[in-house]
Image 1 (cartoon, helix red, strand yellow):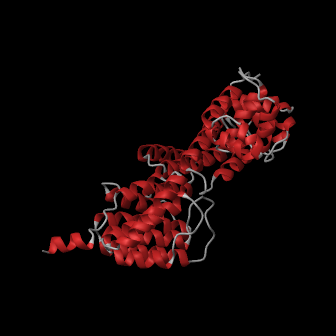
Image 2 (tube, one colour):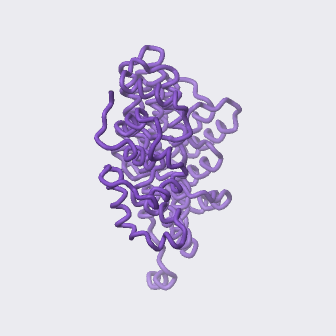
Image 3 (tube, rainbow, N blue to C red):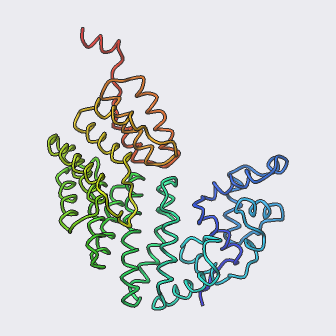
Length: 400
């Protein structure tokens, strides 16, 4: 029997917070938002409220009636679900593993079955695979902060890895494939969070699991994505080699082929090879136009993503005007995300190279605000590369 050293209600409170990707400070803000005006005025300062939440989760203090009501409102749960409940075993294994507890997503039977498999991995079956895939799908969203996604998905990966070491053959391969996809997603989140070493380490995990599962298509996908982790690398030849290696694994679906050629073009752009860059971009556009079933992996193969990559290549080659024409034709979409922040940062870079001071200032301001909001450290790094053009007066002094 799995044992924990805190009350069940405290463990459930912590698990519910972590499933929503809330820090204790964020939960404090949610409690204030859930309160009416009179109650909000009586709440302590956010710092004190955050400390209180830590005590609740440690089981050292139980929320009083008013605090419990606010917690239920913030989580959208009733008091029985949050503080009483009957699924003690479920709460225990979520608490110990860190795997998100997602109320309403699974039946009690699903939770109990997975908990039994946690205790004895040889019990893992197709339903175990489905359980973990559902969790990963729930978090595969660009509107979430990369660092928060990493914290949610790492324990999921650890759980899958523990299973596939001891599970039976048919289920083991399915778990390996899921582990590879999950590791690749974590790798990209480290990339977006500005951690290139972490990104490459998790990419290694993804490639290793894909190879162990003997899935050439998944291996090709992980190799192609690895090339995209090196957009500011000092070794463009490595980016090109990874993209070519992905295609050498076999025939790729059109959108995956386009992804590989996108990243190869990126490597050629960083190397200053204009002809090869344009050739690969043309080929990627042709692949995107071909009919074909989409691969079952998570990546943005939209026209907008293609245009952003094309514009980025033009910036790296020194053709800022061409990049601006592309980016202004298909401006970044409105939803707040790390992808949008990076696209805007690339646009700011293009404006700087084209000496468009006014548009640079406004775009950089918007990109900076969105990057901070969405945790897009890669966008912040791109903005740090932007060198503002000299003012007209300064330019005049230079000419004189």
